[in-house]
Image (cartoon, rainbow, N blue to C red; front, side, top):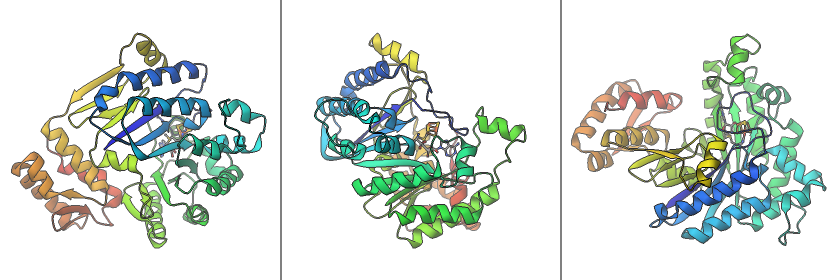
Length: 395
Ligand SMILES: C[S@@+](CC[C@H](N)C(=O)[O-])C[C@H]1O[C@@H](n2cnc3c(N)ncnc32)[C@H](O)[C@@H]1O
Ligand code: SF4
């Protein structure tokens, strides 16, 4: 099973908290799409033994691409890779892009292009080119939160786009952020209830993190915005788990909740150590032994591909790196860390080390053993990354 991730490095405006790779100038969009196509073609042999089961357009903001651009990229994958019969094809979309296509008839011909797509609905046009899953970045339904984060949409647009999207798509994921300064537990519950009212089958939810060199960090340092309150964020995380589990969601990964049958195939590939090909500036790749990362700069990326050079750096993972990674991802998921797999893949020494290091956390009820599996307890969930680092082996 193989996964292809395509990074679209453009956004309309910069959200104050975000340190993903993107540019707010769309001047190089055409060139960049051509470079993505070229990278897909140049790297096809890396995936010659894989069947592509998922294609994921992430960003940045993939919904800034036109239907023709998206179709060009999907066609290129089909022409150069072996693709499964029913691949999951996800597009990360921002509400303001979806809503504009809905509301502004003049925006439509430009966005759709020409080749025989006549529907007035952006959703129907996505479906026609094979996109069958939307991941919509809602974040909050409260104006104050959206303004604080500098999102490009407002609360009304967030609701209108979910209303419309659910008329066309069954497989939808919504992103929500908690721990936003000023977001009370009461409003957080309202946000969760609003998503639930649209019968959405998948939710990804992250605690707001203050990344270095972001506007959010500056505003907090200057006292313009209150700092995030970790205790409140932890409470909101537990509220989220409780409410979603009571509504039939499985908490299958630290930040991801899905109704049965709706877990993200793309994300599951990462967490289960399957190979993935990351296309585009800043995208990461993994082939089972090597990790690769593309240059995080649009101009450098375009220039390298013009010269038929892959702008990628790679490192070969040691056994210890692979063990550490397995522990980290395993503890974040309901699949846990299998002691048998640790022994088989890394050796008895690693299994013994893992059990020794885990003991303290088992005694503190942060970890537990379920047969062969090491898992985080409810109490340990918010702390799983820190717990995992205690179980790491030094190289
Ligand atoms: C990088 S975005 C890409 C998708 C799309 N542009 C959007 O904004 O939804 C993916 C997710 O990461 C979240 N994210 C990025 N930086 C974050 C941060 N510092 N804290 C919490 N969530 C963050 C975004 O809010 C979004 O839900
Ligand atoms: S959160 Fe999404 S829309 Fe906002 S800057 Fe980051 S990638 Fe762009």
